[in-house]
Image (cartoon, rainbow over all chains, first blue to last red; front, side, top):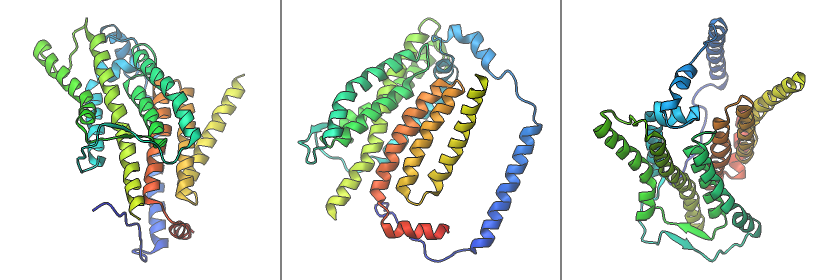
Length: 242
Length: 93
């Protein structure tokens, strides 16, 4: 149903000028009220910074951002992962194929620049994303950043045209969900032992966060790479059909 | 010293606004995408300037990197022809 994107637009549905004036007036009115409200509103001081700084010692990490994302407001991160997974499932190829998980093709169009760049940069990206994941406990960094970096490496890898991943294979499917799975099972295990969903015990908080983050990184990287390559691969199929 | 920092911030602001404008109103979709990626990179500098390094890294990796690649892939898939592109320009005028 969505294979041919129809962007044609025939004739005017509404009068151009009047609709422009209406849009201008409504946007202007909303902007005016928003700006006047913002100017009159006194600046909000404090925020949640003192709360976070008071409790940072029990969170298991020393970076306040990671503490909020993976301890105090961990529900948000859990649901974010679920949203990403749903988005990926929506764009995955709908036909199961029996190809092996990773195929190395002898590339038809040898692009030397991309190929050399990929060869040089991939190991560095791998190491750096591992560093970002590890550094997330005490410095800026974390699972999402590391995963996105890894996915960037994967995109570069697909761009050379010599690697092909089968996203409907069992291994990739497990890789896609394992981040969420570890997260949810940790939540359930903590519910049984601690009595509250995702309430980390003080002594193991750091280790638990690191475990959850590492699996999440893996899943995020695979998910983002799958998002990219399922869009790209459909275009390849289409151009071959022409 | 302070003046240079303020001048840099103002330049950054103006650059963001200009890039945001051209990333929406450029003639071709391809140019819009390229400007959008540039806009993401500039926003990365803005976040870093405000001291939010976590957000800056995420924006750099996701906003400028992956989103740009995804948009280009989508562009490659719909491949607006020359005719459609010039039509859309005329519509805007």
